Image (cartoon, helix red, strand yellow):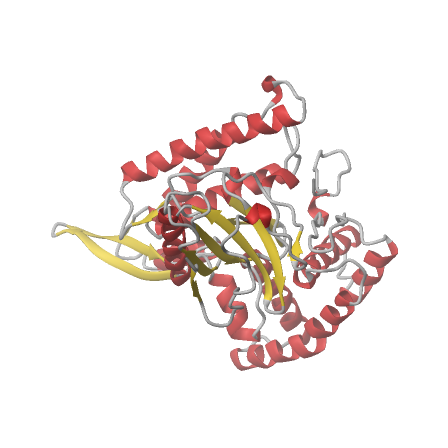
Length: 422
């Protein structure tokens, strides 16, 4: 029985693949060896002219659920891998492990948690990872997603300026609701805590470390940060008649976290009280991405966009174009005179495979160099100094498809950060 393929437009048809065989039996020239996290299902990567793709083999029902959830998350703009295709009827038994397959687009410059974590701690990156993981759960819960199997292995990681971006990978246990109840959120958090502790115990075991040395409280730490973020995103404020300015403060605070604000409801407390309850509905966490795209046409991750917008403001101040019309002109000038020429220089350097992230690291080097000098050194001087120092902060894996870059914010050689791919 021939397999049935559902493939989205703009991608290969994947008809060259032997779908009647298990992935483990495939011996194909365009297979690519890439680091990956632990998975209960077989996963392989394949290179096509249109890009890199991950293929995961699994039974029919969870494959359909995974594809459906990822499609919904894509429509929300939620941080998840992009579904490309679904393959059915690979065998006559829909419960068989290889009866279906999910095809997703490979996330460039991403890596698994095992490439970031080693032993009982991982230095300055620990807080970044915990914040990113907590933010991912908040974003998914805001979108109404009950994950059901949140773990370190079911997430991809990617450097995003001085932060880490987290991307949901596995949606086969997830369900999307119009709104998530507090009970379902609490259940998701409890599952996450147990799964994360298990993941840390596995790392300890694989490295020969004693279980007492494992960071078993990592999930509890994530949960604590999650609760703080969830409260910040969902709290209601009470404002008096002379405190209307606090509405804008609330919106700007959420924008600072990266969230778009879709609605602001002003609800009278009661007839005898002149105060209003301010209830805010947040959307996706793409505020700075969207703003940078609108101003300059540049695509970047959320924290990268925030840092690049600061560079644009730096340029505007330096050129004196601070009026509304002047800012629009400055955005064009910045891209033509500053951003694109520097990006071209970075692309020509050996081992730079993520020029946007490298540009952000250069901006941070300019900041620290200026701070140490007591004056603004400028981008060109920072670039020359960066090269003279051998581009400090970078450690490139031998795999040509994977770059794991260590930002300048964590340049202490004793901070325990492990960055080589396994």
